[in-house]
Length: 160
Image 1 (spheres, one colour):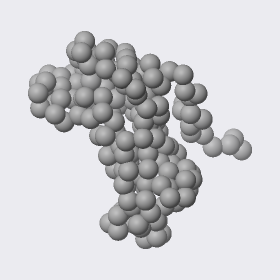
Image 2 (cartoon, one colour):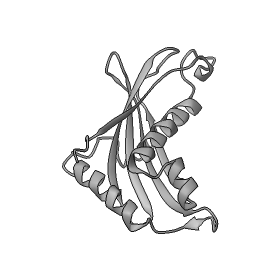
Image 3 (cartoon, rainbow, N blue to C red):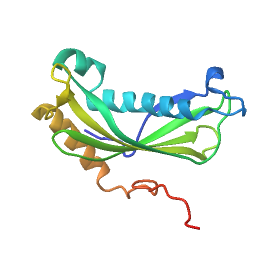
């Protein structure tokens, strides 16, 4: 099985309702667009909505860090690249980059940590072995990639 690295499995277009009074995409919709990219990533991993419906388990975001690099506007085509950075038996660490799909420049980045959740207990639970096997296959394909520059970014203002 050949696995693309990074994954390029989601595209979108900046929708009119995503535009704020400054004339560009509002920060809330960057989160939404990255969430849609995460849905595509999780479907690719076999842990999307169909998995939730059949297993009673899902994922919850535990941490997120978004970096805004360049504004996008109504009608701009978007493409996303996704790196699978790591996992253990209950957690996933991954990273998305959002690009202007025609011009190719980086618009935003998003690093996330998600937890595997038993929806009945509303608590973390280990992934089943079959899922762990799929996760490891994708992770192995991404292991040779350099870690993207935006991973592990800290927010701080200059002292002064």
